[in-house]
Amino acid sequence: MSDERISPLPLENGKPRVQRLVEELAPVHLELDPPVRDPWTLTVNGLVADEVELTLDGVKKLGDVAVARDFHCVWGWSRPHVNWAGVPAHVVLDAVGVSDGATHVRFAAADNHYAACVTLEQARDGLFALELEGVPLPAIHGGPIRWLQPNYLWGYKGVKWVASMTLTDHMDAGPWETKVGDVDGHVPEGILDRFDRLELAE
Image (cartoon, rainbow, N blue to C red; front, side, top):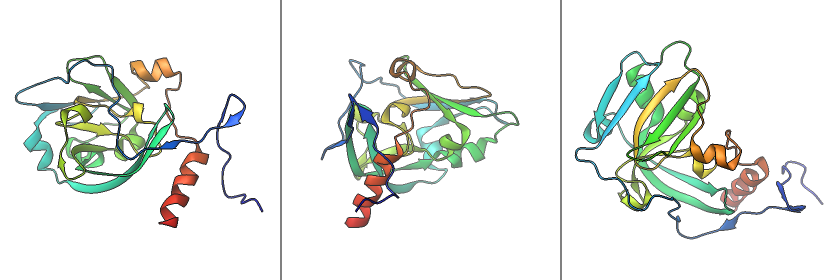
């Protein structure tokens, strides 16, 4: 008997698409070498009350948390229960003050063209990740700091080696968002439903 609460999976070549489960978080990026900066800073600008440049210690002082999130890659794989630690993006946004008219947030990487743009609400659900699986975030995974997208957005919406967060009044899509052809980046409900069921079964 079918369960009508389960949303249909997206179709690919006429067949339901199912994410392949992986045991390790695969590093997916086109950059040859991770950027190196000393010291590393995070610039917060645009439609904010106070434009600031935060050091890593300045970010950490805002208060870190540990979270477990499913990670979904648009290339057809998912890793359930990835353990991260870092500073919730809403904490940083509240600290700088969001100006009236701000609707989107653009996150950009250091020393390359990678960037992603999300709605303000989605940005607040993200995390400035500083640790992965209990150790400082490795450079290959975006260390020392990456903006981790909410689990309901594809992985390409996240930004490794994040160096700036700019609040805007419009969608300012990054390169991968444009190339993929999906600037919104929503993981289909059917996939999210099945991962919710996976968690309930454990």
